[in-house]
Length: 354
Ligand SMILES: [Zn+2]
Ligand SMILES: [Zn+2]
Image (cartoon, rainbow, N blue to C red; front, side):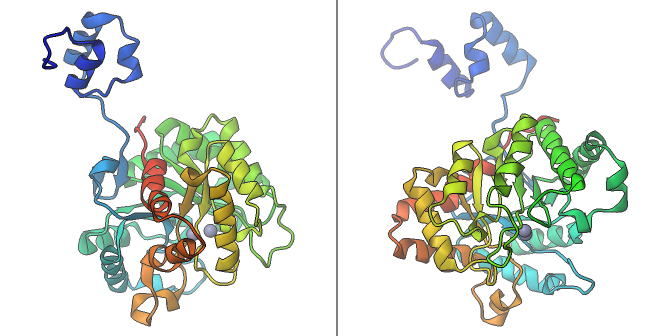
């Protein structure tokens, strides 16, 4: 069977069975256990990306960047934002495909007025694969009943909502100031519980900004503490808006990466929170510290002038505007491709549990 007439090793058998030599089978007790497994269960499923239109293996998604934190449907104030023009969002998503984007994650949920039906229309009519998210944003957006529920009750509801709405991420999960309120701490604990139960990846929002002088530098680390304490898989956790902290040596970002979580530089090209030149310096420092495999890029799309129809770069701005800045700063093209394509596929892929 292996062409040389020599006996097959267990690894050869596993390879032929297409199980990839999973640790569970290797730990089994010989071929009896193996055949029992074969009749009892279909081929084991690997990690998947849960898009609105179906679960797909990361390897079967076409080439291109994956943007893990954008907004295609959102309303934070009393008045509708430009996102409410669904036809326009379809056009923008189609244009982003043409600019090399393979998949986008919408970072909204019901308390940000994200309209799931709008996302379903956008993915169907543009052909852009989309992942929808769930969760709660920050203290001021929470529905009133959050204050009376326990973390366990909130997690129960999130698990049910994730199943009902085909959610492929929990995000963005935030805090409005530099220190978590009691309610925000409870929500992060609930998200961590829901993640542990389902495997669904999580990305967060921090209050860092060049204008916010009262946000402790380590507030991102305090978020990660909550996920670690709950037993989260750090490989499916991303601490977000790290590109809005003035951290030229990437000191805080490096601590996150060392703990196994992803570092979200997910407001690139967004004006008013941190100049892109500072973001480039911090990103290069994180890469030079050996953590290119933990950096995630996205643009948190919230700027009307950035729309293609307004003459801007559109949803692909992370790839077409910020990527070239990293190359100009000396990042090898191979490294940038890994950051834009491989890292987000790894972060977003999970093995569904519940
Ligand atoms: Zn945010
Ligand atoms: Zn956002």
